[in-house]
Length: 467
Image 1 (spheres, rainbow, N blue to C red):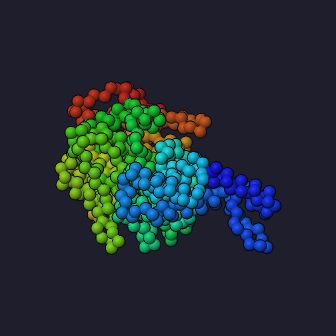
Image 2 (cartoon, rainbow, N blue to C red):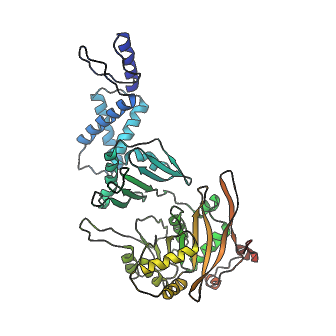
Image 3 (cartoon, rainbow, N blue to C red):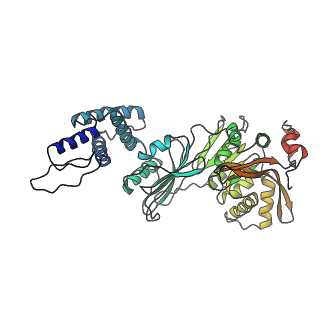
């Protein structure tokens, strides 16, 4: 008989004896003569108390020197101890309850507690914990609240500590924010009080076990076959590309797909704050920045890594995201023979991307004239791919833009592909990325590597309406 059924049976027996019975599914406690009937806990509280008691015994009895990285061996050890504890305490559970309790306890000891089922769900792209009682997810570009909670602020803090401790990171009142990653590469950000007023906040950008492919993007309508054929040719021809977009538009995913077109015989150096790129080529060196330690020393910035990468004989440099002064070093690398380099940056449109680049170069501390910076940008960047998350939650390429050069003090650009929205039906954006009919000026570089794109890629000379 299961624990919950036993509780219900006891309730029925109490009623037959004429005693004050608890609510259906509750638990009873011994009462002294004349004592008033006490409030009883619902089954959920009884289950939680049982979980806590068994979990605490397991933690106390587990060997502290056990190598938790040997997951299967540890699970088997916990399973044996778990069965023994249930037998010793004469706890009877149904098979379903027994297995559920075991998995929850294992998740607390080895994993991330209540978040484990969310991490296992491949349809979820992001997990947002706003304090212990509010957990939201992103699925198919839309946010929804899930019926999962933590027990307390302390429970959330234990999970955060479990994430950051193996990485040598710390989070406390003196350092209440941290960036980290999970073992599978998922990106993590945590913020705790006093910065957060709602309790510990945890945001996890999930890392897909099976990265999206070109075919996936085309099937989802994120990009057209013609545009991807053109972009592949640009990567093979070693054009310098910036992937631009707002937060959550899929910049890293798209950069990963573009990087997959780099020929296998080339040496690639990737530079990221948290390693997310999943390049399949053989000759890849992955570098990751490092925050300062508890004494405020030992920081290795993206800029440090870009400068060092230039000494590593790279054919291509791929920077996960430009956020500051490293943009200057990236531009200089692009202008000094490291063609085919790529990066991402936050911007809502192509023109804003150019302005952001200019601002980031100024953050390097070099007092360069604005015209000189723009000339650097115009000569270094060949192509900007602009991404956008649409109102229906879908992520799409909305522009593929050539950087043509300078006219006076202005960087001149030209759209090769442009997204044209024609409607909004049944909650879906209707539209397509269309060629503008303009052939880029760098076509000779593409043809020099033996790639000859058919005229249909560029709309066979027909421009997009309004151009």
